[in-house]
Image (cartoon, rainbow, N blue to C red; front, top):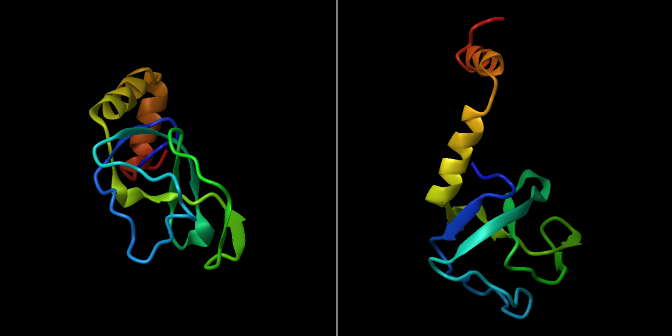
Length: 111
């Protein structure tokens, strides 16, 4: 859905009820654009997204029993049109032979 370097727009900046603002002092803003810098898998519980423009201090995360930078839920963001256009342009630069191979695999054709 999202990749490192994608441009995203915040569509939900509401802080979770009961969340301590001191633990996550830097928060996203509605309709602001950000750049994806990474992800936390969080032991496959929930994927969190890190942003270039928003950095926070490391905090203890009880659910996964470790310290890490708080990350934002991916559902808070939508990929911007500029990021979608860039993805399409990247696909166009792919050699035709590789595109055919990938298309064959995704359609279930044995190669």
